[in-house]
Image 1 (cartoon, helix red, strand yellow):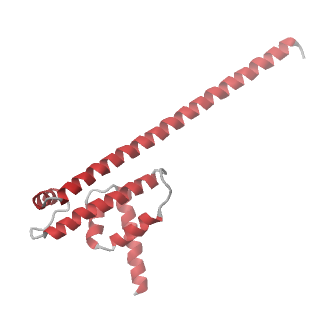
Image 2 (cartoon, rainbow, N blue to C red; image 1 turned 30 degrees about the vertical axis):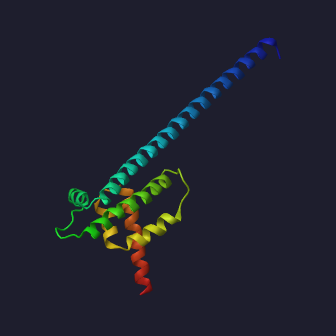
Image 3 (tube, rainbow, N blue to C red; image 1 turned 90 degrees about the horizontal axis):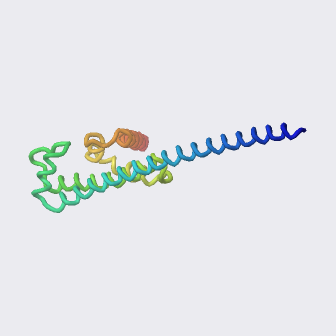
Length: 162
């Protein structure tokens, strides 16, 4: 092999290494961007959940504020809804929002699958009022659908055990 041929092969090898380096750099940049975007979205969702839970906690501390908040937020209560029933509704929001945060993290692959989410939700969803809140209170469609599926499974299990 001549010196010119070796130089040409060296140039080709350098071009291949440069291209591979460029491709690797682009892939890494895209993965970092996508991961950062997912993490930011999770942080945003969590901040919203915390804001709602703070609001729910404040509402639970004052009966007058509880009545006002309950009348402003869907589903609307009946005019004779008792204070304990209103408190149960707003406490349910606290519980559901905690479960929702875990559900969203699992959906985003930010945390491993947690069967406790299903276990607790199935139990909660046996209560018609809790189920109604998951379907009529503005929860995201994936969560509302997940709750619907769990409720149907729980109903089927109850029918099978009767």
